[in-house]
Length: 302
Image (cartoon, rainbow, N blue to C red):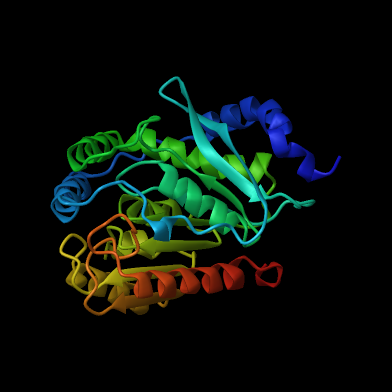
């Protein structure tokens, strides 16, 4: 049976229960230490300040049509805290064999129409895309709700970690992706790095759009995942100094990375509904993302 017959998700649904069982058995309690947890909470407040005047409404820039026909559906990929988790699953409509996959992680607004549109757009480039939901089926329409949702996720780190672990198991085991990357913005950018740290030898690439980073050598020393980081020089939430320390640590550890800092850009410069949106920088960052994924997820990279 050709893989493209999964358009309605039938085979994926049949296999899901087995994947969830395997993921649950292999799950680990990560438990962030006090310093890391405090930094995560501080990041929530920093994001609240950065997004204080933003909205979740899409602009015309968010309505770019995919470059080819895409099959997309709402699909359960995990079970967290005894509740099924539904993500946005997209792939090229003409797909026959499994393609490389990207685990897409939403920003602090949650899994909304903007993220689903980006998932479809990326799938059209030749990828299986699973846009995960780390907010329990909720999406914010105002900054205070977004702050509360992000804070709840930060305070329930083990649940979010389990969510990501099962997302990886889903695209690896059920969707059969030969190579896997993570990609996220803002809150999701930080979790794109965390995904690389969860799978330091197995993930094939990670893209971080202005997400929280670390310069902890102990954690980063285990990382064998190529990193693409895209940051704004004027970001007051994810400050340039922290990005520089992250970059210096990766360099000192001789890691595979690319860091691009956009002069004059603030936080969320690639978010079309935000006040800091910069169309030129957003397009450049997206093109860098596509080039990076093509290189790192190509069959020859095995």
